[in-house]
Length: 323
Image (cartoon, rainbow, N blue to C red; front, side, top):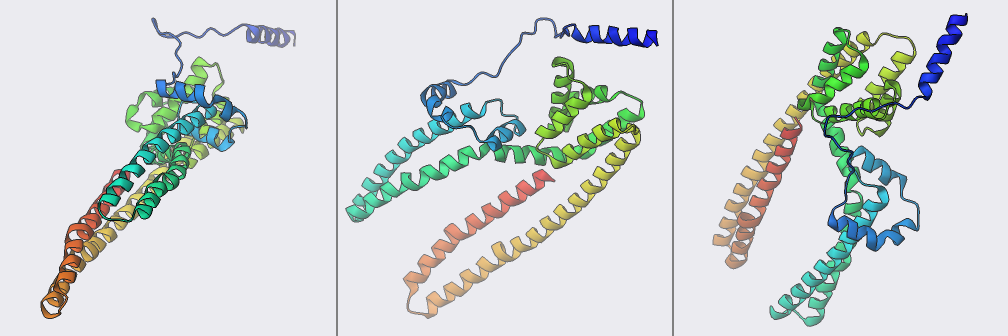
């Protein structure tokens, strides 16, 4: 009993001793510096953005997107970019108004078009810039989900060799082939090795700031299994098998979607414009409105067909990258 009490006292004393953090030789502490434009934006709009509390969803989106900037600094940057955009759109509006007036458009209509361009373009740009962190977080979530299946195979293999959990995530962070999953593991390793956080707390924090629902569920499962006295090796093997099956189903669904889009491409982009051109050409020869039909043909050949082909190509390329 006395020995146990003495051991507890030693642990308490050791806990009070500051933890020494060792870094690589020659390494210096660094921070995330702001660019020159961001510093100007912060000096200019600091009072405006600090008058009201920052939206918590914006702060959360910045953390999940791994954008190393505070919410108030980012909001000041958004205001600055919007102001610059207003100036650019105003100049473009004046140029458009002058150009349209030279083409014979009434001056009032030309001025109205020049005013509409910055008036409607500025709010849209502001909303796009403000929502950029959320879009980046969703993009990171898709990248994590696309690499989580092979990463779980690596984790299960390391666990089968009886490697500790913190060492598993340390090695996972070094495997850059796993993309954003390795980045998430690197943040866990940063918390444990640099900030002195225990592994379970680091996993909880990583789950709360991750944009991927699958990665969150996996980390929370690790914490729950460890705190409830369960074995992590069967859990890792089970999750690796689960993610592998889900990945196969997603691949099958994407291949089926690409096949359906290919059939749609042949029907809509290839066959339909061809038949439409033939029909309009016949109408132009038989009917009396040949000039009007020729203008429609020019619009179909020069505008409709290229835009439809570009749209389908871009969508198929995006879907293929995700696969």
